[in-house]
Image 1: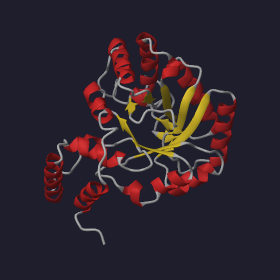
Image 2 (image 1 turned 60 degrees about the vertical axis):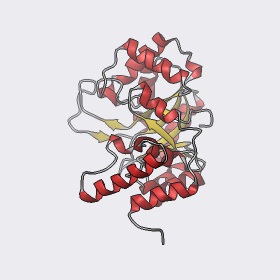
Image 3 (image 1 turned 135 degrees about the vertical axis):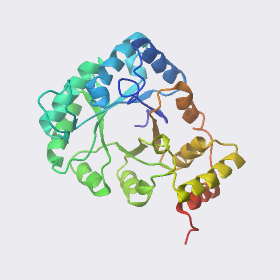
Length: 290
């Protein structure tokens, strides 16, 4: 993923699951992203109940942005009963070889493209067959339909099992000021050990950075004071904390507003000192390091 932008535009809220952008507004947002250097767009087939990929594909044509100037990530594996998925009664996961191949064909058609830069398995299934997934990945790569593959929310052991059958290049997880688990449970380390680019699908804690509990409010007050002393908003501090990691954790910005995406872009060349990073960590943990 070396040619992907350091900030990724998440499209989950561009369509019916969020802002319900028209084709022209979506095209304008694509252009704005590219102009500020955000060339990587994060999709999933299920977004907008399986409608957002198609809307983005139409908007991409309208935008006039050449396909080879952007990178498209999409995901598959979640089955959500809706008008676009008749015949299913419950939400579930499908990571079978057949489903992966069929999902990619549908995503290619929806997005109006001959290839996808990355396809990721959207959630680990308790009954997934790693060898079968690897076979699907090999077929899609050899055909030129998909360049790279990745996974989402896989545990360190699941990452290691997957790379036994195919060399994935990206992993998305929840990683933010309020969710430090990937830093401590071996997830980031498994990515580093296998040359996998780590990404965060909730880089600012899903928009609600802290709980309204007594402890949460006290912690928030300390962090806000620290942010103000350094001339940051608390959102900027959250992004700087994430992006300080030496292995370039890419934030997926799921807010469909140009200024919110630009906020992350403007921080790419801003650096924390290690001491500042640890000050934030200590405030988050509520105690000094041992």
